[in-house]
Length: 372
Image 1 (cartoon, rainbow, N blue to C red):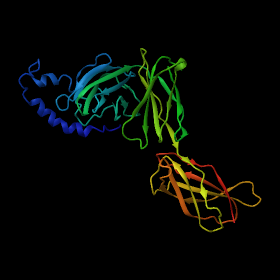
Image 2 (cartoon, one colour):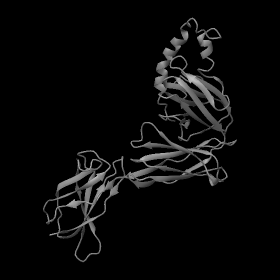
Image 3 (cartoon, one colour):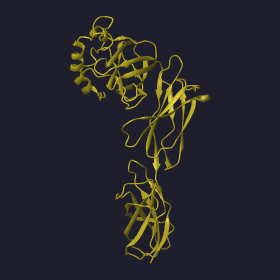
Image 4 (tube, one colour):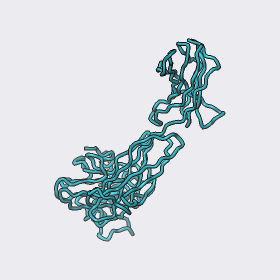
């Protein structure tokens, strides 16, 4: 089971929260029940209060009211999904505990599902398989905890109970830098029928695949449950789609993660006017977008065709170095003056950019040369 990233923070705040509950209330701020603890204990820990109809709107305050706990009965096999949005600058979390839980501040048991996104909206994610829903294995009372790790403010929780729709997002593919591509998909019922007029949101996370997940946009599905988004990533980016089906008996559904690989643009290698066997010559070109100065992003592949042969055969890779170019500020120059080729005859030179995580492998068109 996935360990909550915020467990230690929560435990560290327990003592401070207990101290705050013991403080007398100030004049003019007396709660209706006459004590702070009488107000907070009802929804600040298990058993909490009954989960109202969706959406749930509330407020969290650091130290004073950092948890809102709701209880809900689930039968074995019930599937529930939940989505959280919070005030700007806050980090609010959703956590779902099972029937055996008695205290959301305890180290065990761990949540059965929890939201892990660093941005809103965030979704309740199954701790076992990462899907954006939870299916009860046993019948009983479950506890949904909304709590703050950072900041105070209002929140909204939308939730749905029922069958997960199938959300398809087309396979991983590659595009050239500066180009856009279309992400197609569909939302299907359990029977395989397309679900039209349903809301779909597309989310993105760019390399290095840490930090905030961004909302690309939302669409309403067309006939057959089809949807599409046009995206223009500047680096390798992962995408997934989430469908919110507005029909009784359905919960949220999410697609598999798909990656759009962005290939940099490489110009054809240039070279010295005359190349002699086993003598150094200069070769260079440009790569876009700008790459790290001094790195060895590009290698020039050398292919040789023997006399009488019909095909070129790979012989070696020539390492180049990245340089800043004032002439083309949006490009990086790849350059070496120590290239050499071991045989006379016909050669083919192709620049290759290695996959560095940020961008995918890319090749230039070929330069054909004759070595004397």
